[in-house]
Image (cartoon, rainbow, N blue to C red):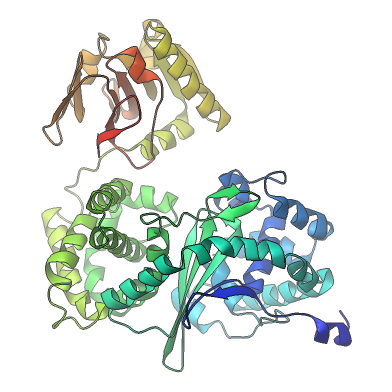
Length: 521
């Protein structure tokens, strides 16, 4: 790009102001870095960030087609080839937008030193960061990235319309966060992600005593060729979550020496949380404390049932002391704001809460965690699964649906009637689709969270009894092989087996055939 052309380029980001302090924009620095990661097609990107994970493709999402057409000849560029190395050096997930914010917003050269990133990730290689920054700037220049960005301003503006429509709701979130955490913020910036699906990230910068907070939001679906983020009254907890990290993380960092003695509490969930990219106890604390804030937000905004569901979901995901943290927020922190002027003041008390968990569970050794659908799918992915069904057409049809779903995900699966199961099959991971009169249930229901008998369903967790047309889903240990798992899908009649809702975080659920959820854990 010549100097004269460079001077004529529109360098302003596409954005809208929801207030004088709250902004939504398509940050060109992050757009550029996302494109480079997309072009790399690295293993990490395909598995954890790709738009294809959310159902996007070049046909329903023309922006993908435009990226491929415009940048397709640059897949061998230095920046693109470096992505796999950068991921290996931890430039993944939230580190991607953090890196992008350190670039010049016009020419994409390095504009800030890496000290704040090194504070969070001292193992980062500064030489590699500098080399990648130079390669990114070179890629932008060689591809004339600003031409692409400016040609897509109309698309970026469409992406922002959803946020404008939810402006009042977003402003309420910023007011809630300032009140809850006891800080006044200089600016709030929301950055929708166009080439990263599902994941969200929070970040903040301190400049001259002023705190600037960012929330980077991955999309969960494509509508009308535009990426969408769930911003309903309850769905906006996605934004609550990412904003909250900029308060919670620094507070935990400052007082981590108080929590460090309890690090063994991470051990029982190490494998589960590591799979979710939460690699240590400090990150577990970040996530637990932030997710408890989400539940508190839902409760105080008039959604107590959703708050309870949120707590149960997160407990089952592995954040098993989230209930203790939530009660500390409700019963102590928010009732004594004369004592705790801000969230950081509450850290010593939260450390005492975690100490109580440590003592109660013998440092995490005396802890029984529910087995979730997530655990079952992981086990099936690792060692395969046998899917079996009873004699009725409804049992067979639903089992075939499960079989097709698993094989489509690359899971080794076989399918057969219950009557054909042999002793070897019974020792494997099993999906059993059965009516409530199946004889095999007498063996399986000795220690299940829900007991099914004819048209009566009793929860052993809550003590409640239900009757009528019901479908029960449970994940349990295999009584024929304690190292394998069983997913039970039981219907009180054939009508109840017309569908299945196996959310990753649940241990069990009781539903009507219509899908109405009566109880879950």
